[in-house]
Length: 282
Image 1 (cartoon, rainbow, N blue to C red):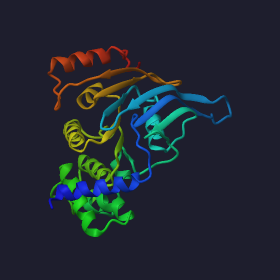
Image 2: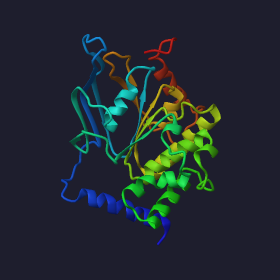
Image 3: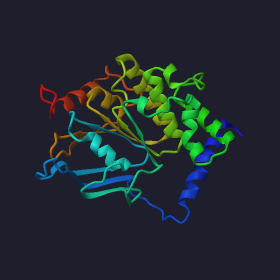
């Protein structure tokens, strides 16, 4: 049996086991309806509504972008989806079920990979970590890890430790680990923000390729319009906090890999940029 077939059988078995006794669900993978989130101030003043009236539906396998200025609540919304924060009002569901806590079906890719991967483990050991915790046997762990290491372009670096990797390679390790752990939903909080321009562009291309090959669902935060168009199928523009919400969505079917020289790319860039003032706000 080929390596790809082994991986597919593993993923299918895991999902079939999880689905036993579960009703068939045909709605959006993620549904956010009239969601709000408030913080209580330090001096017991009235709660601050960071998010208010957020509505969003995400289908399985789609690539969604949350675009907006710094401090508008993009990362807060991601943390609600992952289960790190609880919404104050409204509804947030995955497969029709209310999000109560983090789950294996969701994985977060952080901007700072150094805080997300284990420095004492090699690339392969980092990617295998979640599988090991779940009791997957050594042979299956190795096959799965090497498959995703190759998928993200880290062939030949399996035995390296994080201090031997570039920033882009560390981010690839993060992504490979989440894919190996069978996370259907990848939630990415400006994952390439700390990379130099050249590495950032390479990683954007690698992410788009990996997504097309895996059919995972991605929710990606950025404040870079160009990055949003290079990657996303659905680009959601958020207003400033407090009471931030999604106020405009652009859907695009531009073919991948996308080029800034494409007139349709430039037209979409201009339309999105029109929502931003010269100071970078909305």
